[in-house]
Each structure stands twice: as structure tokens, then as C-alpha cells.
Image (cartoon, rainbow, N blue to C red):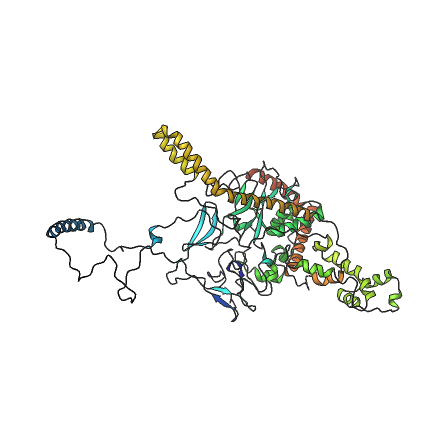
Amino acid sequence: MATARIRTPDEPPSAAWKFEGADYVGFGKWPQQDEFEDKDSLKCATEDRGPTRPPEVNAWPDQDDEDDPDWTPDAQSSSEEEHLEYDSGWETESEGIAAEVSSMSIEEDSEYSNDAPDQYPLTDLCESQFPDRLPHGTWHNGLAYYTGDRKHPQKWSLLSPDHSNTPPEHIASPSCQSMQGINGHVLSVAQMKNCRNIRYLIPKPSGWKADSSDQLLEGNRDNLFYVSGESNGSNIHESRNFRGIHSVYPPRHGLKEISTSWLFVTEGCLELEESLVPLPVHSYCLDMYAKASLRRLGYVDLNGLWHWREMRNMPAAYGVEDRIPEGIRKQIHLPQLQRARQQWDWPWCHIPGDEWLVANPLEIPDISRVLESCMKDLNIKGYTEQMTRFLALPAETIQHTLSFLNITDLENAAKTCRAMFKLAQPIFRKNVMRDMPWLWEVIENNEYPASRDCLPTWDPLCPLGIPPPTLPVGLESEEEEEDRWALILFEDPEMEEVCNVTKAINRQRREEITAPYREKLKTLQKDWHSFRRNVEAWMHGTSERRDVNWRRVWLLFNPATSPLPGIRNRARIWKDCESIMHFVALVREEGSVDERQKELKAKISELVDEHSYGLPDTEPDVPGWLYAY
């Protein structure tokens, strides 16, 4: 989740982010900077990201410079050579005024200093209030805004006593070796789409009821958990502290943000007497697990996913302490994972060559083009016709013989002639069906639906990517207006008619301002529900794609040879899902999970209610006049 990306020279600033999901690599010190040598390429560049604060607007006119060759006297100014008419009365009056002013200034000097300037920049005279809501990572008037919770955004000063500009941004070259972020030349933004998205498994309270979305995930009545909306970002924010609250979009089952301790997020909570820590799962990984579970069990086993976390932490409680390899239990069974997870509370260590670990496993750019190439050359053009005694044997005999060959020898045999190519096709198909159960684009003729196109830095508090509209000066929020009129009517009840007319006009003005934003939010939420329905259809896919060049499918989608990093990551995640289900099935067969299930059910019944993990949906957002959800 705590992944970063270094953009290329041709990409916009939005294509870069640091491990907090904002800013850019180079903006702040990397947590591992003292532990590892970060090897940048000499060909990498830097880019100036500008001043920490926008230029001040001077409200006062520039002073006239008489040395300027274009200077001309003011039409109303007077020079020393002008002869003025003498007024003896004026001199007497002015002396009295001067004495009075002098007396007043002496008294004031005891309380006020005369060191203050007599002119101020406009930004100091009228400093605008910080907006209620800005997208995560926004820079505004010398401050950086980071998402905290809905009512307490975090603001960090960009100002530095030593520098007036923000730190330069690291720009990746093709040979960049930095471990602080993914090289943009290796993985595009599209290949990392939603790579930071997570959803939470949350214990169901006693009054929980299913809704119309994600019924396949939560529909099994034996499941003790439901799934939250999506959150984004890592468990660490700019202050290097763990985030205790994560906002989600869309809100589901009354939860708009989740309060959780990250200390036990991967360690489980079986040994905690009074805590059930929500389990975060990458959104795409959760959908893949659901599909694998549906194939194997006929339902989505969310309980098993929860028990797997507990098994990893306390295998003895499930009787599998000697049966789960340590690498699998700690999820460092691949050398790439060991290198990336140097320490559990550190951000991801981006090792060059291992970028595929964070590639989107479901929405893979260019996969359609690669699939199209597997539909071509079905007539086997370019292959020669040969007749040998071996080819004179029955086709069944030849194919049975070919089935004993390893994949390399089968490939060589298929290239010998057109007849052998055709005979090898069923063998390649069998290998694909056996070794690539995750290739649903071919096996089921079924692609994962396209999700909303947004940057990996999207903010659940600003799902549209823009802040909510603000009310103009003079137009109060409805709450403020109610409070003000309550005082007025208390003193003068006859103002009630004026009150009603004024409130009606202001209500209409607020509605005109907020209506477009509300409609966009409603459309976005409808799109989410439509997307989740399409995901359920994808999970159920069954039909097989016909007329396929199975040899080419094997070569282009084999994780060891595929040019698509997302395919390699998909194969890894699917294998992990199968491993989880295998060990959960193992403890179920031995009966050790039954006791843990009873304990878990009793613990949920005792500790969990609808307010256990976050704010209920009845509380308004900030600002209150834009109650969007």
C-alpha cells in the first residue's frame, strides 16, 4: 500500500507520488535513507517545483521613482518653485492641531510601537480562511493539506527557514535505480491503476442487514464479516505516524471512516481480549480471492480470510505450527517480497527489477491487443507440410506421446511442421487450463470490468477529485443561519416573516451552488454500484473462448515469459489465494477452526455494535451544509 512512483520527463506532476500518496519523491526524507544507499542514475534529472508560497499581491501602488527616465510629475503635485498664497490664519490653526496631535502621540507611544510598517501586502490584510475540504496532498497558501479524518484535516507548512522553494523533484531516467519509488519508465500510471486501494473486512454487528451491493461477497449467512467501501493510501502519513482513521468511499453499512489500530493489522487479534482489528485487503486481491473461493467452495469464504490472519500470527492456536512454512506464514516466500519488505513498519522498498509486484493484476493495459494476436494465424501460415512415419500414426497416439514432453520440447515439436502444430494445440490447451486458472480472458471469455479511471492518489474524502463548492461571503451555512435567527426572533418575534423569506432565499441560493456537486456524487455512487454488479458477473464467468492459438497463449501469458507485468503479478496473487484456501481447508478438516469460530462469534457478539469502527452515517460531513452521502 505504501508504494511511490517517480515520473518521467514527459509525464505531468500528477504522475508522481510519495509513499503517503501525495507530493513527489524528493519532497521529504525517505524513511530508509539512513539504512540503504539509494543509487540514483547519473542520467536522472530534477525539476524545480516552485516557491512554497504563491507571490504576494501588493495592494499599494509602486512608489514613483524620479530617476526613472519615463517619470513625469503628478498633475496635482506641486514643486518648490511654485508660489503659494500666504494665509496667516492657517499657520495659527496648524500649530494648535500639531500640538494636539503631538500630545496624543505621546500618550499612545506608551502602549503602541511605531515600528509597524504603514503598508501591508493584500494577502496579509485579507487572509482567506482555509477551505473545509481539499483533496489529499493539495498545496494551498504555503500549506500542504493531508487527509486526517472528516473533521480534522492535517495541514503542514511548506515554508522552510533555509529555502524559499520546495525541494526539487526527482525525475526518472530509463536507467534510474532509486529505491524510493517505481521508475515511471518501467510501469506506467495505467499499469499501477488503483494499486493503493484497500477495503476492510469488518465484523458484522447484530443488527447488520445486507444491501444491494456486494451481495456475492457478503451474502453467505455464515460469514461473520462484511466489506467496507474503498480507502486509499498507506498506513503512514506525512508526520511519520500511523494513521488511526481511514476514510472510505462509498460509505457502506453506516461507515464513512474506519477507526483501526495498525499495530496489529497484520499480527492478528486472537490474543487481544477486547479488540477485533479490521483486516485491510487490496481491493483487486479481495476480488481475486472471492473468485477463487467461489470456484473452489461455491461461496466467498470471508471467515477463512480472517482465520488466515490469525493462523499467521498464532499457528499453534490452530494446530499448524509445523505445517505452514515460515516464508508463507510471513508472506515473504518470494525473494522479491523479502527485498521489498525490509521491515513491517517501513514503506515499500522499490527494488529495480521487482516493479511487477505492484502492477495492477486485473485491469492490464494492452491485454486486449495481446489476446487479439492469439486469435490470428489460426490457419498456420508459414508452416511447411511434411510427411513422416510418425505423422502416419493415429492422432490420438501422437497427442498421447506429445503429452509426455516438457513445454520446451513440445514447443520445438510444434514448430517442425503444420501438422505437428495442429496436433500440439490440445496439449498446449491442457497446459493453459491446468497452469493458468487465472487467465479468465481465455478460459471464461470474460474480462474484469473497467473500474473508475482515477489516479492512485485519489482521496476518499474528495472522490470527484475536486473540493466541494464553498459558499460566497455573506451566505451562511444553514446551521449558522438558524442560530443567528434564533437570537433575533428571541428579541423581536415580529421578525418571523422576514426570517422565513430570508431563509427561503438563502436556501435556494445554497441549493443552486451545491446541486451540481451533489448530482455528480450521486452519479459516481450509481457508477460504483453498477461496477460492483459487473464484478459479480465476472466472478461467475463460465464460457470458454474458442478458436485460440493455444501455443501463443502459453508463450504470451506464461508468467515466466509474459511481457505483461500485471499477468506475472496476477499469477502470484492467485497462487497466494489458493495457498490460503488450502491451509484454511486443512484446519477445517481437522476441526481446529471450529473452536476458534465459536470464540470469534462470541467475541463479535460481545464487542461489536454499529458504532464500533467509525462514524455512523447519520452524522453530517464537514461542511455540514453539503451532506453528500
